[in-house]
Structures are given as C-alpha cells and as structure tokens.
Image (tube, rainbow, N blue to C red; front, side, top):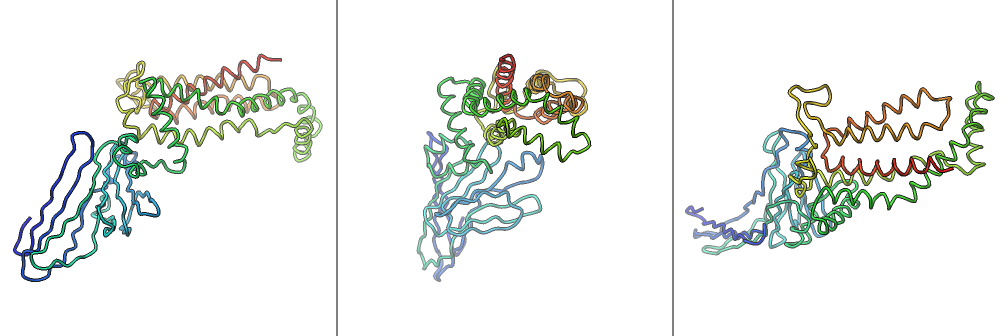
Length: 382
C-alpha cells in the first residue's frame, strides 16, 4: 500500500515443512513531517451464527506473560501485553505471536453475530523517511498437540477443554501415545476404556462388595419396613443404624459413576475436537467423530431422526441387562419403582448418546460392557 504520506509492505514467508508462517510488516514515512502510526492487525473474524453446536466450539485465546484466558465473547474486550492471540473452531486454529510486547489484543463487535479479533500496537511516531518493521509468527492449521508443540510449545495452551482441562490434557497425551503403538483410533479408544477401568477397579470392587452386602441385608430391611411402616423417620434411623452395624456405605455404589463423570466429560471434549478422528474408520464406522450411522432410513423417526446408530442401541441394551442383574436380588418392597428405573435409565442414556460422536459412544459401550461382565461374575459368587 502506498499514498503520499506512507508506504506499507506485508511480507509472508511460508514453510514447506509446517503450518508456520512468518509475517513482516514494514511501514515507511514518505512525508516531510512526523507521522503517527497505529496499525491494527486483524487475525480473523469469529462468527457465532449458523449451527449453534459448532458456534459453541469457537473461542478466542489471549495469552500474556502471567496467564492465559479462553473466551467465547459477546462484547468488545481489550487485553494488554499480548504474548500470543489465538482463534479456533472445532478442528482448526489460527495463532499469532508478535515479535515485541507493544501489542494488545482486542475483540471488536462487527454485528450481533460476528466479532473481529486482532492485535493493536501502541502508537509510534515515524520521522521523515524513517522505516519501522514489525515481525509476527503465525500458526494456521489443525489443533494437533504434537504439531503445535513442535513449532512452539507455548502455543499448545490454545487447546483448552473447559472445566476438566487437566484430565483432558492427560487423556489427549495418553490417546496419542496408544495410537502411536496401534495406529488405529478405534482400537486406541478400546484400549483406553480398559486402562480407565483398571484405574477405577478398586472403587468398582468396593461398589460390588457393598452391593452384595446390601442384598444380604434385604430380609432384615424388609422386617424393619413392616415394623415401622407408619413411621418413615424411625425406619430411616433404624436402616442407617443397620448399615453402620455392618459397615456398609449405601452411597458407595455411586462412587465409580461419579469418578467416571469427569473422565467422560473430559474425553467428550477431546474426542469432539480431535481432528485426527475426523474420517477415522473402525469396523462399520466411517467417521469416529460422528455418529456411527449403520444405515439411513427414508423417513425420520421421532427423536432419533433418519439415522440408525448401532453403538448407542447396543449400549442401551447392555445398560438394561446391567440394571436387571443388579435388581434381581434386591428388595421386593420397591419392585415397581426399580422396574420403572430399569427401563427409564437405559433409555435416557441411549437418547443422550444417540447423536454423540461414535468414538465417545464406543468408549462408554466398552467400559459399561466390562462393568457388566464383572458384575455378572460377582453375582455368581457366594
């Protein structure tokens, strides 16, 4: 760009080996007077229109020397002293790092659904015929941890996974390590399911022992129900006293599921954002980042749409068997309620998982199948 006062040259230097780009920005004062220069550099536009499930996966990363902030913004923001600035969607990202610390980051609202994201420099004064040169390092490519780290380890902070980011980062590196051994993402997820099961095995074993103890106490609990049928408060007190006498924690059965939840949510974020899973095949599954789609119906079904996804159906059947197995030796006093839960609980999970990425459903199916097999084995023991 050139006018009577100034000349601006942008020079892009590309690499044949990586997604790294070097940008040199040169400004020259062509006038006979001092020139004030304050040039913003726009990284890109964050659009929150269209598919909201995709819009939620878009965010901006601001990194300073002290901290890193991740935002899905809805207003104008300025962050001083920028170390690097990142913009990402589900699979890809753009990162820019200025060569000096004179830049601030900004988000500027263009319209209700679009926000301009970029860098703004502190104003400088150029003397007549003086040149000023700015340098930037840019990454433009997939969100792949190993690829980004090879260029700049600090930039990997753009790969943020929300509340359970710490767990997600561990899972991401573990998945990457396993894949390096087996070279198949479906097999990698199955191995991960076994490893997490082994990690939680002590809690699972405790849950199963507690469940068997509670089943053994059912006759005595039934007697208490008959004795204190008109006094619910007394019944609760006596029941808890019975649990204390036999050192049973009635809530221990929930512990493995509670411990699974952070792992599940972290894995969900990792798998849904993993560009490596995009188009990854396994058995009949054509894309582990999407529902498994065994076949498509000519007309949509209520709640399910026109896709028949086999993995969530198998998972629902497995959960139904698991619920039935755990109910078989329990109290008859609440049999109707338990029968209702035996149907509602698996159907609810099946509905939630039906349109989730098949890689995530595969993990949950394998994990719940291992749990079911262990439960059946324990239930046969005397």
